[in-house]
Image (cartoon, rainbow, N blue to C red):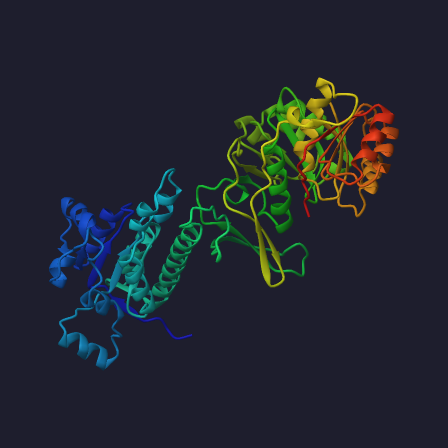
Amino acid sequence: MEEPRFNEIKTVLISVTDKTGIVDFAKGLMRFGVTILSTGGTARLLRDNGVRVMEVSDYTGFPEMMDGRLKTLHPKIEGGLLAIRDNEKHMASAKEQGIGMIDMVVVNLYRFEDTVAKEGCTLEQAIENIDIGGPTMLRAGAKNHTYVTVVTDPADHPAILKEMGSNEGCISTTTNFALAVKAFQLTARYDGAISNYLGTINPDGDEIIFPSTLTIQVAKTQDLRYGENPHQKAAFYRETDHGAVGLANARQLQGKELSYNNIMDGDAAWRMVCDLTPPAAVIIKHANPCCAATSDTVHNAYRRALATDPVSAFGGIVALNRHVTGKTALELCETFYEIIIAPAFFPEAKRILAGKKDLRVLEMPLFGERAIPGFDFRRVAGGLLAQDWDNIAFNVRNCKVVTKRRPTDDEYLDMYFGWSLVKHVKSNAILFAANCQLVGVGAGQMSRVDSVKIARMKANLPTKGCIMASDAFFPFRDGIDLAAEAGITAVIQPGESVRDAEVIKAADEHGLAMIFTGTRHFKH
């Protein structure tokens, strides 16, 4: 690789929507005697704060017009950014046309994403927030990064001023290249957001959920030691929507870096516990719940959850949906866990958990009533599947009772608990629960009746008096017969099998109550 060269910064163009730190940055640049060009509101702000500024319209001899749509698209701007300084023809053309060189461009873009995220945003408002001049300058400067420094992120201001201070007002080509990459990533994200938004607009009025071309941009959070297995390389990326709630934006209080499998299981645990309204605890192994319960306090919920299957809980991921107290932290420390996730931890709990140096502790808010933004993606060879999230509203009391016996109030409560969990279990999924406590799980089997058998086999607590939740319909009555044999008293399932009548008859014969949700929850 060639040795980096250093370019002196003599002329800077500043035109920003996000004005965070821009005054301090401009004042820092002034110490190096640079000429600062600027536009509109940015120029006024800088001038009002004592920064010497030349308006771009004065520099180009061409006024801003068309409500600001046209101000920087001019040969004196684009030529000053694109000219190759070592190319005699370029420089001769620039001299002939009176084009001076621009050594740094400081630009961020109109807030298109924020605009379209506002409720009631019209197409006209969205269109007016599509930046034209900004991306053009960024792309021009980034293309010519050997000579031009492109600044898009206020977080980079201090490092740039420091480098200029160490190099007599110069910036290295190494730095310019890194900043150019950021600039192209920004314009790619920006254009992608515009494309995605306009792709959902149908002039005929019909709703379009999935645009014909979908652009996705994610930012790398960390390189991982390996993937699911040690021979696989891996990295963790987060969505660039900084307002998104999720594991990618969790606050890690302590412990080693998360592994690939930690992230997968942590996300599964957190999404499960978000679906439970009362104080709740869930323990995950291999993306399936092995322990879960609700109670009057999160401490009692954890104790009841652990009783589900304390053997499988070892080495699992715990998620709780309330603040963790010192008392709960003490009990958590009695079992080996990889991760503990909660909305918050009281100071005493943090102190206690700190004694487990390798334990990863994550603070992350709950979704509550909000839907997960964006799409649920699944990669396949040569393509990508996209769907909306499985978060359909559900009221257990509105489900159709198909048996002679109606569920009791306690059974309804347990069926709501079981239905909230079973959608997170790998299909074919069967779940036994009683008193809002998980009792047994049968996950990922090729036949539903085998899942029933496994749920009974895995039960550490009595199955008599439990409800059974099934993520999809029963194709035959055998699953109901086995459930009744295990002591199940009520069943919640989607229904809509061609043998529903046979399955309902089996439930009636055993005196079970059964309700149909009409909604399936496959999870592959």
